Image (cartoon, rainbow, N blue to C red):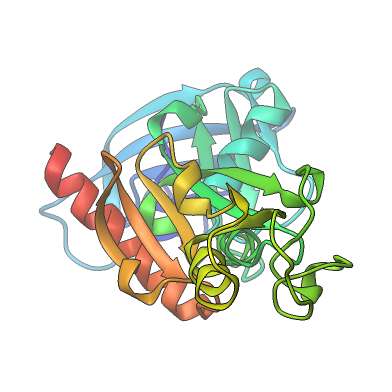
Length: 268
């Protein structure tokens, strides 16, 4: 796959106002031809003078029959999203226009070259970590990482339990609002366990709903309400990041970047 990290190396050859010369930073050209577009790789003269340089070498990377101009403008910082869109066209080369009129392309799209990060969360209520990751990805704030995200969201409303954590999830009997009498099946995490046993003793059974307990793949990011578990490291043998229940988008963003830097340092 060829997918330039920056649009500044991609030029367009729709017209030739200064003849057969190209901008000195150009590595690729999108050239308009009668039937559509083709993609060229170019080598500007490194010893030339000025911004526009003679071309020492050019090569057609994708012909007009292999190339398509994507029908909508995209956020070019959402790199995984662009690869998905390129795959959807069925063409070897997809040219993208951006909101700011810059151009980029994806040639021979391949998502397997992106690192998969596993996201663990629960609902109801809102799966806040998962939704935040999706919003950050759509905004292009995670594009530099060249990652995709696989979301593992457990719906705790399907659990056969008598008591759930809180009314915020829409449950009718919860630890935060109802008095326990003993013998209940409680859907809860370590905090729920601690609360129940401090207030009512140990005559109950618990179904663990903590997202961190569901982790089975790495690298990962998970949400947990225990502050002492937050940070980056190994959890039950899997490497990843843990953020607090109410983590802000900035905190989530920083955690993903720090975790991926540590992951890549470990794996070269």
